[in-house]
Image: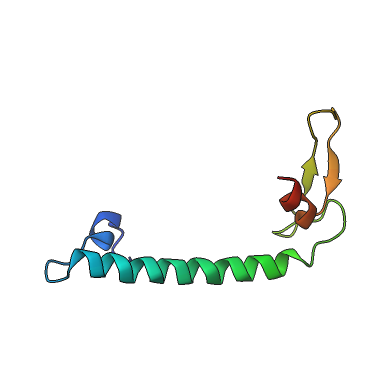
Length: 82
């Protein structure tokens, strides 16, 4: 993907079977996504105080339909509410 041309990066090579290429790249995409989720979810648990968030310095606030004032919540709490 270093070419800068996204269309060329995802084009099925002419000598490849389209179904096999799609299956292999779907599995690869899923594995990469799972790795990124694992990294973020582990780091997310460090921020448990109200107002703390991931990434560091990011603040989470929540207001439901009955509340006019937003309250500070931790990122794990925000994930459950959202």
